[in-house]
Image (tube, rainbow, N blue to C red; front, side):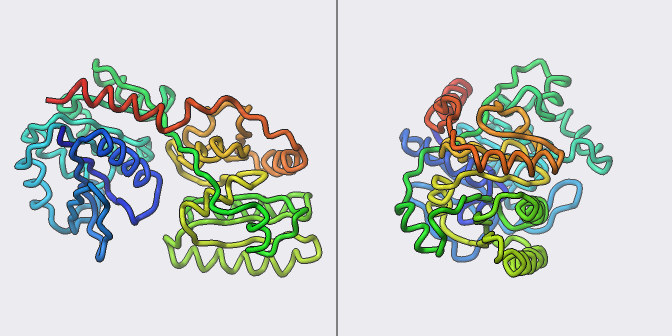
Length: 363
């Protein structure tokens, strides 16, 4: 089967949708399918084994407008014979530019809308009205939860089955020992470790994370803020907040380590953490929550996206900052790390569901 995955960004750009697209691509390549990626142009992009990456210099979406190789991309979708095209996320150019020509794309088409974060934004009302007229051109729609906005949207406007497949993670072995972690970052072995993994930008809420960490009563703690610099202005603010915090809290033996590192090391730190603290402002079905569960690290999170529907055995969710602060203290003192059986959250389980749908609708 010849598969095209359309995604606004892709590796080495880091993010949830990018990771999801890469996991799907690698899985189907390993199943001896031919996989191509259509994505935004990145200069000096490293080639990935067995993946054919088609790059386009395009920005925008229907509401904000487009710039770049618009016709080149649309002609690419029309003229290339793929058995199946998977659109990963709406509200961005690699999907939105397909809508005006969707009737001319002869390939089977799957949409993973990724939450519709702007569904209640009045500026996007015409966009979703337009999308309603195009839904029947898709052979399959996949959402992550029956309570999600995108699922409810499609159930109201189409009689087609909307499949439910949540996100997941894989087991990642630590790249070094816990003692090496302590030594590398000069952490006392008696300290508790809290971890936050998100790209550094306002919507990911690192400022909220610092605020909660500042107010917890537990001393002898270290917070790892791990992420790539996605917004220079916000990153400058976070660096200032970290510097100020570390100076103020020396006497309490509380420290923040702002870190940009590899995925493997981030997962290593997560594996050794006593708690994962997630403070994002906007999400759909964040992969980092599944990574936390698979790492057997309990999480404390704002009730953002689909996080609020996770079982309480795996973590604690609230939009009340005082509740989040108190629960963070409680879990840091609680040595019981027992979580629910996590096999249902493994990519190996989840990708088999994707494969079943892909094979069912292929030409």
